[in-house]
Length: 255
Ligand code: OOG
Ligand code: MG
Image 1: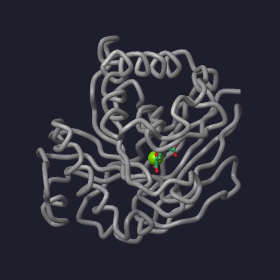
Image 2: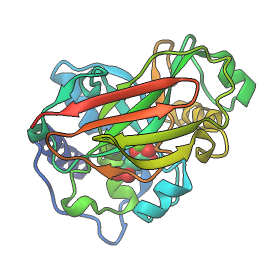
Image 3: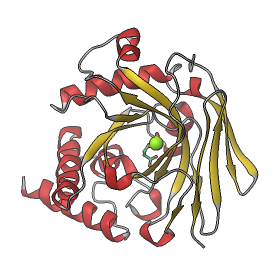
Image 4: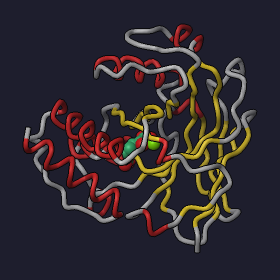
């Protein structure tokens, strides 16, 4: 127990002050259960500072991300309002350790969704879908971690940017997308990269959140996971994702 609090404090302080920490579980001795307990305790510290829970993010739901980070298990993290970056605004680079960005699709729910649900059941709970960007920022030195370590670090959650909310009746199984940094296309992909269909990521989120005793709530956002490898971001840049049929979402990094 004391070790859970100790690591939760270490990681939360690092996220809060944008400092890096050394890996503490190089041999993956920490169980996944303990890793999620550390994550929960670290997010509790954010809640105690006045942030509130707004949803869930999924990780390693595409092969591109699994290959980039060398891990192959789907993970999840907790989103708070403090992580949301308003579309079109500028972030302060000094609030991050070594941020990266990746294109995702976001869901917002109109009703709770819990347990083992089917794709159609998951879709029926969706109020809207949106093109989105996730700003990930591992607190570990050199952005390197083991599976339990990244889970403990709230799956590198740091920021998320949501574009226009769209009708979930649009077929979003395989929408082309591009990530542009300063006018240069740096990644090209498709929403199909997410477990073959982004809805599968929502189905997994419903199961995993319920298992953790925190079922998905009406009004919650679910970020489905990066569809391409993540890109480093630097001060002064403008970053955007353009998604077929759904539109775009972007942000600036202050110089
Ligand atoms: C871990 C978080 C993974 C995704 O979309 O796959 C993730 C990381 O890559 O640092 O957010
Ligand atoms: Mg992500």
